[in-house]
Image 1: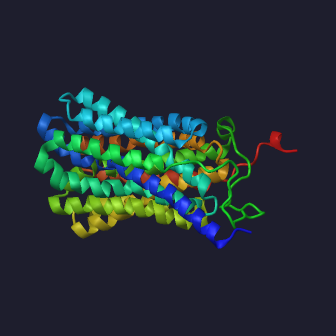
Image 2: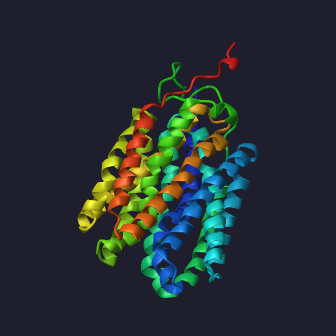
Amino acid sequence: MASAIEVEVETIHRGWRIVGGLLMNLALGTLYAWSVFVAPLEKEYGWTRSQTSRVFTIAVVTFALGFIVAGRLQDRFGPLRVSLIGGGLVSLGYWMCSEIHSLNWLYVWFGVVVGFGTGFGYATPIPVMAKWFPDHRGLAVGLAVAGFGLGSAIFGPLCSKWLVPSYGIEETFRILSGVFLVMTVAGALLLRNPPPGYCPKGWFSPAEETEISATRYDFSPGEVLRTRSFYLMWLAYALGTSAGVMVISQLMPFIKEKGISADHASTAILIGAFGSAAGRALSGWMSDTLGRANVLRLMILISMFAMPLLDRLGGNAAGLWVMVFVVYWCFGTQLSVNASMAADFWGTKNAGINYGLLYTAYGVAGIIGPWIGSSFFERYHNYDNAFTMAGILAAVALVAELLVRRPKVPTTTMG
Protein backbone atom coordinates (compact mmCIF):
# COMPACT_ATOMS: atom_id res chain seq x y z
CA MET A 1 0.00 0.00 0.00
CA ALA A 2 1.49 3.36 -1.05
CA SER A 3 2.00 5.96 1.69
CA ALA A 4 0.48 9.42 1.46
CA ILE A 5 3.95 10.93 0.92
CA GLU A 6 4.70 8.55 -1.96
CA VAL A 7 1.41 9.41 -3.62
CA GLU A 8 2.05 13.14 -3.18
CA VAL A 9 5.58 12.92 -4.61
CA GLU A 10 4.29 10.93 -7.56
CA THR A 11 1.52 13.48 -8.13
CA ILE A 12 4.09 16.29 -8.32
CA HIS A 13 6.25 14.18 -10.62
CA ARG A 14 3.32 13.54 -12.96
CA GLY A 15 2.30 17.18 -12.79
CA TRP A 16 5.62 18.26 -14.29
CA ARG A 17 4.83 16.13 -17.36
CA ILE A 18 1.65 18.17 -17.87
CA VAL A 19 3.65 21.39 -17.48
CA GLY A 20 6.08 20.18 -20.13
CA GLY A 21 3.26 19.37 -22.51
CA LEU A 22 1.65 22.76 -21.90
CA LEU A 23 4.87 24.68 -22.58
CA MET A 24 5.49 22.76 -25.78
CA ASN A 25 1.95 23.23 -27.05
CA LEU A 26 1.68 26.91 -26.10
CA ALA A 27 4.46 27.62 -28.59
CA LEU A 28 3.23 25.22 -31.26
CA GLY A 29 -0.37 26.43 -31.02
CA THR A 30 0.51 29.69 -32.73
CA LEU A 31 -0.05 27.75 -35.93
CA TYR A 32 -3.77 28.28 -35.24
CA ALA A 33 -3.24 32.05 -35.15
CA TRP A 34 -2.22 31.97 -38.82
CA SER A 35 -5.13 34.20 -39.84
CA VAL A 36 -3.50 37.19 -38.07
CA PHE A 37 -0.63 37.00 -40.57
CA VAL A 38 -2.90 36.83 -43.63
CA ALA A 39 -3.78 40.53 -44.02
CA PRO A 40 -0.22 41.84 -43.35
CA LEU A 41 1.26 39.39 -45.85
CA GLU A 42 -1.36 40.21 -48.50
CA LYS A 43 -0.77 43.92 -47.96
CA GLU A 44 3.02 43.59 -47.99
CA TYR A 45 3.36 41.35 -51.04
CA GLY A 46 0.04 41.57 -52.89
CA TRP A 47 -0.79 37.88 -52.51
CA THR A 48 -4.38 36.61 -52.92
CA ARG A 49 -6.60 34.89 -50.38
CA SER A 50 -6.22 31.49 -52.06
CA GLN A 51 -2.43 31.84 -52.02
CA THR A 52 -2.22 32.71 -48.33
CA SER A 53 -4.80 30.02 -47.44
CA ARG A 54 -2.60 27.46 -49.19
CA VAL A 55 0.18 28.17 -46.68
CA PHE A 56 -2.04 27.02 -43.82
CA THR A 57 -3.19 23.98 -45.79
CA ILE A 58 0.40 22.88 -46.42
CA ALA A 59 1.27 23.46 -42.76
CA VAL A 60 -1.61 21.31 -41.48
CA VAL A 61 -0.84 18.49 -43.94
CA THR A 62 2.86 18.42 -43.07
CA PHE A 63 1.85 18.72 -39.41
CA ALA A 64 -0.03 15.42 -39.74
CA LEU A 65 2.79 13.76 -41.71
CA GLY A 66 5.35 14.91 -39.16
CA PHE A 67 3.17 13.49 -36.41
CA ILE A 68 3.35 10.01 -37.99
CA VAL A 69 7.13 10.06 -38.33
CA ALA A 70 7.61 11.51 -34.85
CA GLY A 71 5.15 9.02 -33.37
CA ARG A 72 7.24 6.10 -34.57
CA LEU A 73 10.51 7.73 -33.44
CA GLN A 74 9.27 8.61 -29.97
CA ASP A 75 7.91 5.08 -29.46
CA ARG A 76 11.47 3.85 -30.11
CA PHE A 77 13.71 6.60 -28.70
CA GLY A 78 11.54 8.47 -26.20
CA PRO A 79 10.07 11.97 -26.29
CA LEU A 80 13.08 14.19 -25.48
CA ARG A 81 15.03 14.04 -28.73
CA VAL A 82 11.91 14.09 -30.88
CA SER A 83 10.43 17.14 -29.15
CA LEU A 84 13.76 19.00 -29.34
CA ILE A 85 13.86 18.41 -33.09
CA GLY A 86 10.30 19.68 -33.36
CA GLY A 87 10.99 22.85 -31.41
CA GLY A 88 14.15 23.51 -33.42
CA LEU A 89 12.34 23.14 -36.74
CA VAL A 90 9.51 25.47 -35.68
CA SER A 91 11.97 28.16 -34.55
CA LEU A 92 14.03 27.80 -37.72
CA GLY A 93 10.92 28.05 -39.88
CA TYR A 94 9.70 31.25 -38.22
CA TRP A 95 13.16 32.82 -38.47
CA MET A 96 13.46 32.03 -42.16
CA CYS A 97 9.97 33.45 -42.80
CA SER A 98 11.44 36.82 -41.83
CA GLU A 99 13.96 36.54 -44.68
CA ILE A 100 11.68 35.56 -47.57
CA HIS A 101 9.91 37.66 -50.19
CA SER A 102 8.65 34.78 -52.33
CA LEU A 103 5.37 32.93 -51.92
CA ASN A 104 7.03 29.60 -52.75
CA TRP A 105 9.59 30.08 -49.99
CA LEU A 106 6.78 30.92 -47.57
CA TYR A 107 5.24 27.59 -48.53
CA VAL A 108 8.56 25.90 -47.74
CA TRP A 109 9.51 27.61 -44.47
CA PHE A 110 6.10 28.04 -42.87
CA GLY A 111 4.07 25.40 -44.68
CA VAL A 112 6.62 22.59 -44.65
CA VAL A 113 9.24 23.35 -41.97
CA VAL A 114 6.97 24.93 -39.33
CA GLY A 115 4.26 22.39 -40.10
CA PHE A 116 6.61 19.40 -39.89
CA GLY A 117 8.23 20.74 -36.71
CA THR A 118 4.82 21.26 -35.15
CA GLY A 119 3.98 17.63 -35.87
CA PHE A 120 7.21 16.51 -34.16
CA GLY A 121 6.56 18.67 -31.10
CA TYR A 122 2.86 17.82 -30.81
CA ALA A 123 3.47 14.07 -31.20
CA THR A 124 5.33 13.73 -27.90
CA PRO A 125 3.09 15.08 -25.09
CA ILE A 126 0.06 12.96 -26.04
CA PRO A 127 1.69 9.50 -25.64
CA VAL A 128 3.54 10.72 -22.56
CA MET A 129 0.27 11.76 -20.89
CA ALA A 130 -1.48 8.56 -21.97
CA LYS A 131 1.25 6.48 -20.29
CA TRP A 132 1.57 8.53 -17.09
CA PHE A 133 -2.20 8.91 -16.48
CA PRO A 134 -4.12 5.68 -17.10
CA ASP A 135 -6.39 6.76 -14.22
CA HIS A 136 -7.30 10.18 -15.68
CA ARG A 137 -6.19 9.84 -19.28
CA GLY A 138 -8.81 12.11 -20.85
CA LEU A 139 -8.18 14.97 -18.43
CA ALA A 140 -4.37 14.69 -18.60
CA VAL A 141 -4.21 14.55 -22.39
CA GLY A 142 -6.75 17.37 -22.55
CA LEU A 143 -4.74 19.61 -20.22
CA ALA A 144 -1.52 19.02 -22.13
CA VAL A 145 -2.99 19.72 -25.56
CA ALA A 146 -5.06 22.64 -24.21
CA GLY A 147 -1.85 24.60 -24.57
CA PHE A 148 -2.22 24.28 -28.33
CA GLY A 149 -5.48 26.21 -28.14
CA LEU A 150 -4.16 28.72 -25.60
CA GLY A 151 -1.12 29.41 -27.79
CA SER A 152 -3.27 31.21 -30.32
CA ALA A 153 -5.08 33.03 -27.48
CA ILE A 154 -1.78 34.46 -26.28
CA PHE A 155 0.23 34.96 -29.44
CA GLY A 156 -2.62 35.82 -31.81
CA PRO A 157 -3.62 39.10 -30.09
CA LEU A 158 0.03 39.74 -29.18
CA CYS A 159 0.95 39.65 -32.86
CA SER A 160 -2.07 41.50 -34.24
CA LYS A 161 -2.22 44.28 -31.63
CA TRP A 162 1.43 44.86 -30.75
CA LEU A 163 4.16 42.99 -32.60
CA VAL A 164 3.03 43.43 -36.23
CA PRO A 165 1.91 47.08 -35.84
CA SER A 166 5.04 48.00 -33.86
CA TYR A 167 7.77 45.98 -35.59
CA GLY A 168 6.34 44.76 -38.88
CA ILE A 169 5.72 41.23 -40.11
CA GLU A 170 9.39 40.31 -40.66
CA GLU A 171 10.62 41.32 -37.20
CA THR A 172 7.58 39.63 -35.65
CA PHE A 173 8.65 36.32 -37.18
CA ARG A 174 12.16 36.77 -35.68
CA ILE A 175 10.81 37.54 -32.21
CA LEU A 176 8.50 34.52 -32.29
CA SER A 177 11.39 32.31 -33.39
CA GLY A 178 13.43 33.14 -30.29
CA VAL A 179 10.51 32.88 -27.87
CA PHE A 180 9.42 29.52 -29.26
CA LEU A 181 12.93 28.06 -29.04
CA VAL A 182 13.10 28.80 -25.31
CA MET A 183 9.60 27.47 -24.63
CA THR A 184 9.95 24.24 -26.62
CA VAL A 185 13.34 23.35 -25.16
CA ALA A 186 12.01 23.90 -21.63
CA GLY A 187 8.96 21.78 -22.40
CA ALA A 188 11.00 19.01 -24.00
CA LEU A 189 13.22 18.68 -20.92
CA LEU A 190 10.15 17.90 -18.79
CA LEU A 191 8.77 15.17 -21.06
CA ARG A 192 9.77 11.66 -20.02
CA ASN A 193 8.10 8.28 -20.40
CA PRO A 194 7.27 6.27 -17.25
CA PRO A 195 8.75 2.80 -16.75
CA PRO A 196 7.11 0.04 -18.85
CA GLY A 197 3.92 -1.25 -17.26
CA TYR A 198 3.64 1.84 -15.04
CA CYS A 199 0.61 2.08 -12.76
CA PRO A 200 0.00 5.03 -10.37
CA LYS A 201 0.49 4.23 -6.70
CA GLY A 202 -2.77 3.38 -4.97
CA TRP A 203 -4.69 2.95 -8.21
CA PHE A 204 -5.83 -0.24 -9.83
CA SER A 205 -7.58 -0.39 -13.18
CA PRO A 206 -11.06 -1.96 -13.15
CA ALA A 207 -11.15 -5.73 -13.45
CA GLU A 208 -13.86 -5.49 -16.07
CA GLU A 209 -13.23 -3.36 -19.14
CA THR A 210 -15.80 -0.68 -19.86
CA GLU A 211 -16.12 1.72 -22.73
CA ILE A 212 -13.80 4.10 -20.91
CA SER A 213 -11.19 1.74 -19.47
CA ALA A 214 -8.11 0.92 -21.48
CA THR A 215 -7.34 -2.32 -23.28
CA ARG A 216 -4.67 -4.56 -21.77
CA TYR A 217 -3.45 -5.50 -25.23
CA ASP A 218 -1.08 -3.30 -27.26
CA PHE A 219 -2.09 -3.32 -30.91
CA SER A 220 0.64 -3.07 -33.51
CA PRO A 221 0.12 -0.49 -36.29
CA GLY A 222 -0.73 -3.30 -38.71
CA GLU A 223 -3.36 -4.68 -36.35
CA VAL A 224 -4.86 -1.21 -35.91
CA LEU A 225 -5.23 -0.87 -39.67
CA ARG A 226 -7.16 -4.15 -39.76
CA THR A 227 -9.83 -2.92 -37.34
CA ARG A 228 -13.14 -1.49 -38.54
CA SER A 229 -13.08 1.08 -35.75
CA PHE A 230 -9.96 2.74 -37.18
CA TYR A 231 -11.63 3.66 -40.46
CA LEU A 232 -14.83 4.89 -38.82
CA MET A 233 -12.83 6.98 -36.35
CA TRP A 234 -10.66 8.28 -39.18
CA LEU A 235 -13.66 9.37 -41.25
CA ALA A 236 -15.35 11.05 -38.29
CA TYR A 237 -12.10 12.78 -37.33
CA ALA A 238 -11.39 14.05 -40.86
CA LEU A 239 -14.85 15.42 -41.56
CA GLY A 240 -15.56 16.59 -38.01
CA THR A 241 -12.42 18.72 -37.80
CA SER A 242 -12.73 20.10 -41.34
CA ALA A 243 -15.30 22.58 -40.07
CA GLY A 244 -13.00 23.85 -37.33
CA VAL A 245 -10.00 24.09 -39.64
CA MET A 246 -12.06 26.09 -42.11
CA VAL A 247 -12.97 28.63 -39.43
CA ILE A 248 -9.41 28.83 -38.11
CA SER A 249 -7.95 29.46 -41.55
CA GLN A 250 -10.61 32.03 -42.55
CA LEU A 251 -11.69 33.63 -39.26
CA MET A 252 -10.20 37.10 -39.78
CA PRO A 253 -11.32 37.37 -43.44
CA PHE A 254 -14.78 36.05 -42.46
CA ILE A 255 -15.11 38.66 -39.70
CA LYS A 256 -13.97 41.40 -42.08
CA GLU A 257 -16.57 40.26 -44.64
CA LYS A 258 -19.23 40.53 -41.92
CA GLY A 259 -18.19 44.13 -41.17
CA ILE A 260 -17.11 43.51 -37.59
CA SER A 261 -14.60 45.99 -36.11
CA ALA A 262 -10.92 45.10 -35.67
CA ASP A 263 -11.21 45.19 -31.86
CA HIS A 264 -14.17 42.80 -31.90
CA ALA A 265 -12.28 40.58 -34.35
CA SER A 266 -9.30 40.34 -31.99
CA THR A 267 -11.68 39.46 -29.18
CA ALA A 268 -13.18 36.71 -31.33
CA ILE A 269 -9.74 35.16 -31.87
CA LEU A 270 -9.10 35.24 -28.13
CA ILE A 271 -12.50 33.71 -27.34
CA GLY A 272 -12.01 31.02 -29.98
CA ALA A 273 -8.64 30.07 -28.57
CA PHE A 274 -10.08 29.74 -25.06
CA GLY A 275 -12.95 27.71 -26.48
CA SER A 276 -10.51 25.32 -28.12
CA ALA A 277 -8.47 24.99 -24.92
CA ALA A 278 -11.60 24.47 -22.82
CA GLY A 279 -12.87 21.84 -25.23
CA ARG A 280 -9.60 19.93 -25.04
CA ALA A 281 -9.35 19.99 -21.25
CA LEU A 282 -12.96 19.87 -20.05
CA SER A 283 -14.22 17.49 -22.72
CA GLY A 284 -11.25 15.28 -21.89
CA TRP A 285 -12.33 15.32 -18.26
CA MET A 286 -15.94 14.59 -19.26
CA SER A 287 -14.82 11.64 -21.39
CA ASP A 288 -13.23 9.98 -18.35
CA THR A 289 -16.72 9.64 -16.91
CA LEU A 290 -19.16 9.67 -19.82
CA GLY A 291 -17.09 7.75 -22.35
CA ARG A 292 -14.90 8.97 -25.20
CA ALA A 293 -17.30 8.11 -28.02
CA ASN A 294 -20.30 9.65 -26.24
CA VAL A 295 -18.53 12.98 -25.79
CA LEU A 296 -17.31 12.98 -29.40
CA ARG A 297 -20.81 12.25 -30.69
CA LEU A 298 -22.28 15.09 -28.63
CA MET A 299 -19.72 17.64 -29.78
CA ILE A 300 -19.94 16.69 -33.45
CA LEU A 301 -23.74 16.98 -33.19
CA ILE A 302 -23.40 20.47 -31.73
CA SER A 303 -20.87 21.40 -34.42
CA MET A 304 -23.30 20.31 -37.13
CA PHE A 305 -25.71 23.08 -36.06
CA ALA A 306 -23.10 25.57 -34.86
CA MET A 307 -21.40 26.00 -38.25
CA PRO A 308 -24.39 27.47 -40.14
CA LEU A 309 -25.39 29.41 -37.00
CA LEU A 310 -21.96 31.05 -36.89
CA ASP A 311 -22.53 32.33 -40.42
CA ARG A 312 -26.01 33.60 -39.58
CA LEU A 313 -25.08 35.27 -36.26
CA GLY A 314 -21.57 36.37 -37.23
CA GLY A 315 -22.66 39.86 -38.25
CA ASN A 316 -23.33 40.70 -34.60
CA ALA A 317 -20.38 40.87 -32.19
CA ALA A 318 -22.10 39.01 -29.35
CA GLY A 319 -23.43 36.30 -31.68
CA LEU A 320 -20.02 35.99 -33.28
CA TRP A 321 -18.27 35.53 -29.95
CA VAL A 322 -20.73 32.92 -28.67
CA MET A 323 -20.67 30.83 -31.83
CA VAL A 324 -16.89 31.05 -32.27
CA PHE A 325 -16.50 29.75 -28.72
CA VAL A 326 -18.88 26.85 -29.43
CA VAL A 327 -17.26 25.92 -32.76
CA TYR A 328 -13.76 26.01 -31.29
CA TRP A 329 -14.89 23.98 -28.24
CA CYS A 330 -16.24 21.24 -30.51
CA PHE A 331 -13.08 21.35 -32.60
CA GLY A 332 -10.76 21.15 -29.57
CA THR A 333 -12.75 18.25 -28.15
CA GLN A 334 -12.01 16.10 -31.17
CA LEU A 335 -8.27 16.75 -30.96
CA SER A 336 -7.99 15.66 -27.33
CA VAL A 337 -10.64 12.96 -26.94
CA ASN A 338 -9.62 11.10 -30.11
CA ALA A 339 -6.09 10.88 -28.70
CA SER A 340 -7.31 9.34 -25.45
CA MET A 341 -9.71 7.05 -27.30
CA ALA A 342 -6.87 5.75 -29.48
CA ALA A 343 -4.83 4.85 -26.39
CA ASP A 344 -7.88 3.19 -24.79
CA PHE A 345 -8.66 1.15 -27.88
CA TRP A 346 -5.17 0.18 -29.01
CA GLY A 347 -2.93 0.42 -25.93
CA THR A 348 -0.03 2.74 -25.06
CA LYS A 349 3.07 0.81 -26.16
CA ASN A 350 2.69 2.01 -29.77
CA ALA A 351 0.60 5.06 -28.91
CA GLY A 352 2.77 7.43 -30.92
CA ILE A 353 2.54 5.69 -34.28
CA ASN A 354 -1.02 4.39 -33.78
CA TYR A 355 -2.42 7.82 -33.01
CA GLY A 356 -0.22 9.19 -35.78
CA LEU A 357 -2.04 6.96 -38.26
CA LEU A 358 -5.37 8.24 -37.01
CA TYR A 359 -4.06 11.81 -37.06
CA THR A 360 -3.64 11.67 -40.83
CA ALA A 361 -7.37 12.41 -40.80
CA TYR A 362 -6.51 15.85 -39.48
CA GLY A 363 -4.09 16.30 -42.36
CA VAL A 364 -6.96 15.67 -44.76
CA ALA A 365 -9.07 18.15 -42.80
CA GLY A 366 -6.28 20.65 -43.36
CA ILE A 367 -6.91 20.31 -47.09
CA ILE A 368 -10.71 20.21 -47.01
CA GLY A 369 -11.35 23.05 -44.54
CA PRO A 370 -9.29 25.88 -46.07
CA TRP A 371 -10.29 24.80 -49.59
CA ILE A 372 -13.98 25.04 -48.75
CA GLY A 373 -13.54 28.44 -47.15
CA SER A 374 -11.37 30.11 -49.78
CA SER A 375 -12.89 28.56 -52.93
CA PHE A 376 -16.51 29.17 -51.91
CA PHE A 377 -15.67 32.75 -50.95
CA GLU A 378 -13.97 33.46 -54.26
CA ARG A 379 -16.88 31.96 -56.16
CA TYR A 380 -19.80 33.45 -54.22
CA HIS A 381 -18.07 36.43 -52.48
CA ASN A 382 -19.45 35.30 -49.13
CA TYR A 383 -19.07 32.37 -46.73
CA ASP A 384 -22.72 31.21 -46.63
CA ASN A 385 -22.27 28.07 -48.72
CA ALA A 386 -18.96 27.23 -47.03
CA PHE A 387 -20.57 27.09 -43.59
CA THR A 388 -23.50 25.08 -44.91
CA MET A 389 -21.08 22.55 -46.40
CA ALA A 390 -19.17 22.37 -43.11
CA GLY A 391 -22.42 21.49 -41.31
CA ILE A 392 -23.10 18.71 -43.83
CA LEU A 393 -19.62 17.27 -43.31
CA ALA A 394 -20.22 17.28 -39.55
CA ALA A 395 -23.45 15.33 -40.09
CA VAL A 396 -21.58 12.63 -42.01
CA ALA A 397 -18.92 12.58 -39.27
CA LEU A 398 -21.63 12.02 -36.67
CA VAL A 399 -22.97 8.98 -38.52
CA ALA A 400 -19.46 7.47 -38.64
CA GLU A 401 -18.88 8.18 -34.93
CA LEU A 402 -22.17 6.51 -34.00
CA LEU A 403 -20.93 3.30 -35.64
CA VAL A 404 -17.61 3.18 -33.74
CA ARG A 405 -17.15 0.22 -31.37
CA ARG A 406 -14.21 -0.94 -29.24
CA PRO A 407 -12.05 -3.30 -31.34
CA LYS A 408 -11.67 -6.91 -30.28
CA VAL A 409 -8.25 -8.26 -29.35
CA PRO A 410 -6.86 -10.28 -32.31
CA THR A 411 -7.77 -13.94 -31.77
CA THR A 412 -4.22 -15.11 -32.60
CA THR A 413 -3.02 -13.52 -29.34
CA MET A 414 -5.47 -15.37 -27.15
CA GLY A 415 -4.54 -18.61 -25.46
